[in-house]
Image (cartoon, rainbow over all chains, first blue to last red; front, side, top):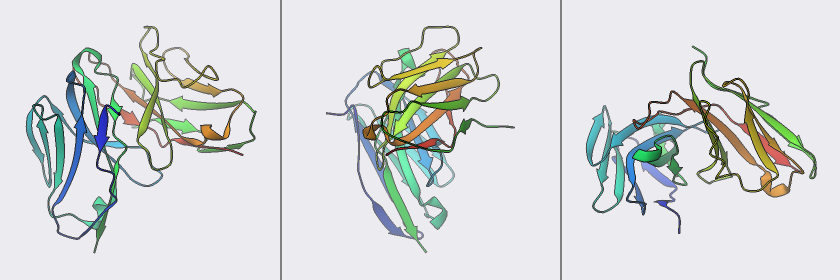
Length: 112
Length: 116
């Protein structure tokens, strides 16, 4: 079993919809939780990161971490066609913050 | 400013040949990472360099894979005797190491390797 499991998708939504992307993990040592966005044939870029539990909001994006359930989510409000990409969750432990474990990614398509 | 660059962007090789992939990190970044991404898959960690410390090679899939980082900057990932299952996108990332604080990784565009 993988340390990080991500809903495989693909996900297709109409423009303006609220999107929910999720990951679960098994390693209780993970303290940093990241979401990366990857456009086709590009490298991933960091979208948001959260330390430990709680919520973090940045514009239309909200990241949630529930460490008791080992479950993280990324919500996208008012989704736009430009949000169409693959979203990867990633996690790292405090003792080895440089080494991240990634999920397999969820491909999102937002249709105009 | 310049981001992480990788070369070549595409590489097609024959089974059994050796290949070298290059990564130029962001200037001043002390940490450098190599990942492999197979079609439709997430990122598979390969190796991690941090400053002058011994690299973390725990992700290298076999002894055909090796990497070096010269002068704390440019890195080369070498795959010897390539196999078809080595076909993937090889991504490099760099970060400024901040100890136990999270280190944002900045990724290059990747090298797409195809082994025929």
